[in-house]
Image (cartoon, rainbow, N blue to C red; front, side):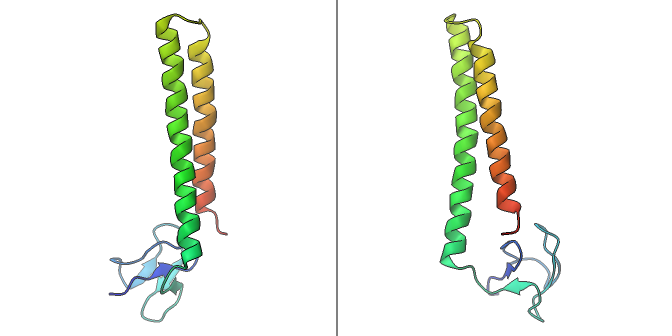
Length: 108
């Protein structure tokens, strides 16, 4: 079976029934009638998707790093407010990661 993609969100539909709803965005598709599907992703679409996933992963790693740094400074006894600052920065990065993830799901 050739790979087919949802023409709305680029979700790969291989392995799914030939007719149904895209599990990612809910758009109806019919592979046999070629409705709601595309045969391939362009190189630009793949590149944009990979870049968005990398951006989201970086935000998540930065939030974990900020929380860990705040915890380390708190345990080392350097500053009393370090944990609160670390958690605040971690939450900001985590919110950025969630927003980045949600922007991946928006229809372009």
